[in-house]
Image 1 (cartoon, rainbow, N blue to C red):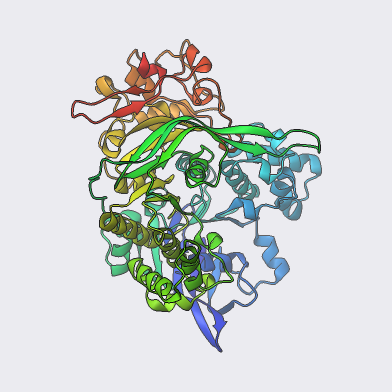
Image 2: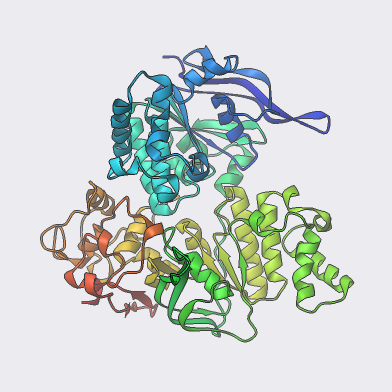
Length: 627
């Protein structure tokens, strides 16, 4: 059988200083019917350019200098605009990385999803709406009739990505191009989207070109893979062969891009102490004479961070992680409870998007010098000396002093952001998703930089992330937050080996891991560690359907009396919108938990210390464990 999709000696370039800069250089590959081909490589390797060329979405200054792209044997590069439009959304479709910027913000969901049917079929409005509702239902969205009349901003990130998939699949295309479709999503939503794509592939037989920089995701979903570097394919083959036995030096670098573990914490001085912290946001009032309302985002949160410690904060999008970070550094002052910071410590923040936090109109030298001037360093030469020294510390040479932010790569900008925070000798670095927007090799470089600085300066770091693989490698302790409450907290090895709270177990089960054993993460908790059953299968059972399944009365352990078994089947509501979640009176996980008790609705469980025999503390808030 011939290939469904072929790229043959494709070369793409952009004019630059009177010459043509090749961003894709003579690449060839093919995808068979029903195949999922992965494309991996760092930013700028040509992955997305190849996909955009196939879809006819290259910018006007891009030049296709040679080669062919064929779909079902038909050359598509030479097609007219009208002929290309017949293919787009009909025989081939694309899912983009960020649905919020890809969906039209002023067009309702139903109209956007049905637009391809209007262009490529003769269906009437009633039939189109029926097909749209069916498509939204197929991708696991509840109440599709209501969703049709909503706008993109009214949906969560995971729901918007499902809408994008429904839009791409509604005409049953032969080829689906997915360009980093899960990069911006938290671990649970990522797991849901990958399962959805695999199900659509199996049920509808669609071929998928899956672009990602996450090797674990590629292992999870793809059968074959090509590795791109600087516009060239450097390696190709079956996923297992390429990623477990890489031949090219660059592929080996990609596979080895896992940060070293952090050095042990040596200090005992308390740097940050939060006691019963409640954090609020002022919501805009509707009307001139109405008082502003307060929305509680963080509830009764207690946490201590010690000198030289890297403390991990994990949880889904919208759980309050970033709100907590902004409160600690002083960007949000609307809180109650106690927050104490050591006198010689001045928390500084490293943001997720360094380009958005760096002044594009100023040179890097000015950006780094200005905080020193504001803090009383008046001598220009002294400021310059400190800035150049810091540039060296973050792995950049003196030439960056005269550059602008838009002249730097994502990794270089993040180095500048880290340098800006360290210049003030803060003592506490609050890193809010500092590597989530970076490709795998740059992630590794930035994480190694943080670990190196941590070791040299005995720096305390509050590390916020939704990437549980990274957190496991670099943090000493981990706190799991759900809807503004810490539901579990322990040493990193302890919590990964014995997660106790239903939400924590569900979070870890959703991780697309590196294939290594998670040291018992699938075992039952504590004294029930010998409970039987497969956690993955139990979780799948608990996630079937729109509602969380219950077995017997609320709180009864499905499939047995052992609390450990009960925790293995904690359920999740796929369409629960974290962005709209509010702090509740009882357990925040109540509406999503398959092992909830009656009292979980009325009150949150006390925080219980499940200290292990080796003395390691393990705090958890769950009535199933507290009783």
